[in-house]
Amino acid sequence: MEIFGKEILIKTHGCNVLNEPGQRIIPSVNIFVKVTNQCNAHCVFCSNAGYKNASTAFNIPKLMSVIHELKDSNIYVNRINITGGEPSIVSPLVYKILDSIDEEGFNDVHLHLNTNGLLPQSQELMKYERWDSISMSLHHYDLEKLSELYGCAIPQSALSFAGIDLQILNASCNLIKGYIDSPGEAAKMLDFVIDLGIPRIGFVALMKVNDFCHRHFIDLEDIHIDTISHVYFTKSMNRGSDCKCSNYLYNKNLKVLEIYMRNYSNPMYCESSLVYDGENLRQGFNNNNIIC
Ligand code: SF4
Image 1 (cartoon, rainbow, N blue to C red):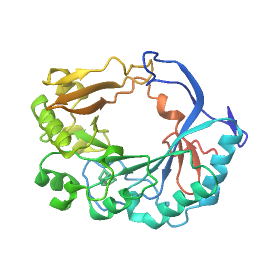
Image 2 (tube, rainbow, N blue to C red):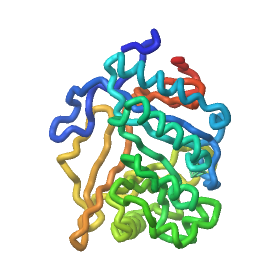
Image 3 (spheres, helix red, strand yellow):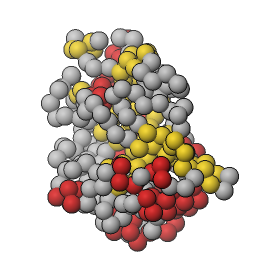
């Protein structure tokens, strides 16, 4: 399909459809809106280095015209992901973008926030009521280890999530040698997250972007999630032919936690995402492929 006279990749088959993997779905895209490359944390495994800072001259009307063009081309905007860097570094810009989306009549679009989630500035942004879902980083159950990983002090108060709707939260835990790196450590992480009241957690392998990531890489298979007590594989969440998501449930003390393990078998699969950096719209996460 085309937008602005250029062919784009779109998602046409579902991977998460109950009992029917690979079922045809309405042609759709996810738009990643990269509002900044700055962050208030200093993680050594950060894959964000190298992106230009888009926050200084972010063109909101152009983003609106992109959404209009997609809708006019009968391409469903599955969700808009506000991402960074850390979006709360430029919160006023984020609020303006969200307000514009609603003012243009796109109130039905699912709005998702990616955030580091544990610093006061980040938690302020997470309280905004327009979010439909939020992914936050949570790489350990121990506050000291968390501070070590973030490269800054995480306050104890961060774990109370005051004023934040826990039901829309998704914790994302990087597997890192010396931290969460084994079935025993993963089990502790599951207990920690279920006690916090967060309903889902994703385990993610590090992208090998630097020497630290190479040396501390832990494969998803290494935590042997299906050997952990109270973990059940959910056959209802299927594995599609491209995206080999594994989904599990952790059921303990009458509480339930969803677990996902992401492992894309077809690296081109996520190329169907569009990325807008405030200036250019691109196909996928490469620096080339400019659509407009
Ligand atoms: S929180 Fe995310 S963007 Fe910020 S330094 Fe860590 S990995 Fe990078």
